[in-house]
Image (cartoon, rainbow over all chains, first blue to last red; front, side, top):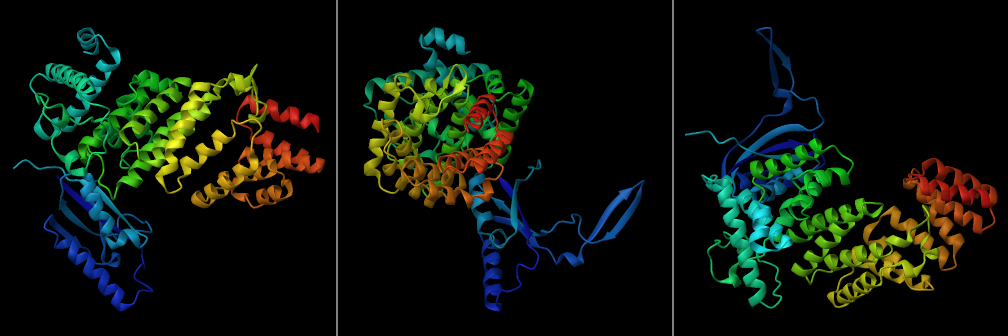
Amino acid sequence: MQYALLIYDKPDSGAGLSEEQQRAISGEYLAIARDPRAVGGAQLQPVETATTVRVQDGRPLITDGPFADTKEVFGGYYVFEAEHLDAALEVAARIPAARLGGAVEVRPIVEMPR
Amino acid sequence: MLASLVGFLGNVDLAEEAVQEAFALAAERWPREGAPHRPGAWLLTTARNRAIDRLRRERTLAAKTRLLTSQAALQEPASVDDDDPSTIPDERLELMFLCCHPALALDGQVALTLRALGGLSTDEIAQAFLIAPETMKRRLSRAKAKIQAAGIPFRVPPEHLLPERLAAVLAVVYLIFNAGYSGRADLATEAIRLGRILARLLPNEPSVLGLLALMLCHDARRNARFAAGELVLLDDQDPSLWDAAQLAEARSVLQRTRSLGHPDPYVLQAAIAVLQTERPIDWPRIVPLYDELARLTGSPVVELNRAVAMAQAGAPEAALELTERLELLDDYPYLHSTRAELLRRLGRTDEARAAYQRALALARTTPEQRFLQRRLAEL
């Protein structure tokens, strides 16, 4: 089964961390991306770069900023191939955002017919 | 289907268990392998074969309980045609961990556990929790759908996950017990039954034995808790109304935890409950158990009970002081009823009155209200 691991960061969770600590965290993200079960993923640029689109009455409504005005910010995702949910949850628990005040949402992906 | 199996086997419990196992197997296999062409026939055959297997096992094996390793659990369950009884696992443990998986909403966990392992009908579960049957049906469907869609595994969790997953299972069982404690005796009985199954399948887990002993002890006192609709406090209960056999079982289960090492909250609670069935109650022995329990759990409710034990052991001032630090429990009626009782014993009548009134305002049941009103009048 394939799972999306959607990463929500606590804003400014990087503040107060030394450069070395930040490098270590980046290393963790990289290591997870290199897991053979990771079949996809991306890190998104910061929330300030986001633009949101809605369409009302056939006209696109463009606004500055992310979709959800929440504290936590959607920062990126992995797509993982896993035998069952527990396997995906174990990877999710290792994602740095989860222990730095953010969260990781794990959701199965709809399997597209080939 | 159950009926035809009962006819075939002549044993309702065995038939029900076989049916449950067949459904659990279906829930696990069909999403992966696709549903068979004739699901009804598959279920019946599966159920019948599992029942036969169980009969064979129970005849040929001595009580062989073992915690399945994750490898064994992850393997395909033995095919129903397998003739070797020793390779057929008892899958109730897997089912328990499945039903209580943290990815399921708690109310779904409770409903599913009662449905799949407790053998209660959807209507019976709905009734027990005072919920409309349609709502309960939806709750169960949601839980089952989540299991399939999210790929919740049918297995005993591996070693490193076992402590927290087992804690979740025990929490659900205890929740069911507490739901039954203040009335629905069948729920309490179900919880105890699940506790016994867990104790048989995990005989070396102190938390499992502790919870079973705790439930048995509380349940044994069921008939003494009310007299003519009025609440009877522990000290005043008539021991002849207690279920002696259940108490004896509680004590013997608790005894088995002695050699199992590290302190566990359920074991401590059970030890306290058992000590409270002695006459007279040895409160000085109980206080250190509460000390340990408070240390392990950090729970303000435990601290409150600890205060009660301290007062009973002869230190009401220290107990009162403890209660003054429990602001977290300000909306908890028993904080105020306890303080009222302590203040009364210390002769601080006006303060006691105020505390009883506060407790009365927060009281949750009519017998409790009447009890508090009587105490207020006696001041």
